[in-house]
View 1 (cartoon, rainbow, N blue to C red):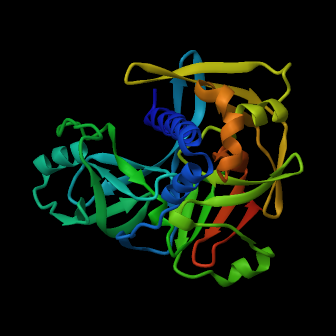
View 2 (tube, rainbow, N blue to C red):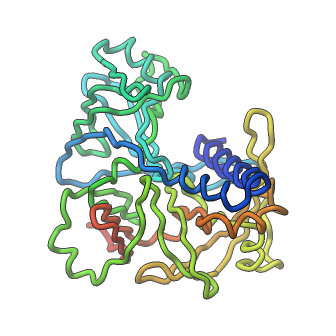
Length: 339
């Protein structure tokens, strides 16, 4: 099972468990504390410079149980200056911070010694890193290290692509970021380019705590959806109650378990033609999912949390999403054929 599924299902399942525990223990007060914690503002120490050119990405596919899933992750290939090996970041807007895996860094240090670290706010950071990210030359500093995660790698294997870590939402902070899902590239701007003025009105969203909360309307109900590109293959992960309302019970239901530390986390999906009004667009959600582990409790939890669901990449796959975190505005446009 891919890192995407393990991380997503653990995060979704454990979040629901926290919600359940808090609602049972302290009701509204507990849920308010949870929301405040989730959207808490934390310092962004990441600094990077890049060329004004697109950053290409690749779709990763994987088998989950008896099912072959496409587009389970957005992988951004990268090369590190002076090292012949192939690496990649997983692009994950659900993570507020870009992360370098500690185990992977230890293998890197066997090849190249000059990776210095800095301690700040009880965390370790990689002081400096020169990389080619999706074809774009980037100099980055203050990348947080996550000790005990990631894989070591054979220093003689220069073919296999190694997961260096996660490219998080801090990469979008104070930037205008264009994600073209159809043509598979990301582009970052320091200010909104003039050509975007012809696109029409942008819509507001919230970026508190570097969580991308997009307003949407489904079944005539206003919702706030947490856009998590790490939930790549999904359309919308939501409560069991909404799942039942948004899908056709005669449609085949797909179920499989994610195995995390020996414990199965069951997740259920159905294909759907349910439309979502979001920004200036109407998008087909294509797939609705829920985590079955806490299904019978979810309808009691939902009124206390602002998250109407986790929104993945599937609804956007023929479109371009532009996120302006400076003004907290976004727009969705149809992707053009790239020459």
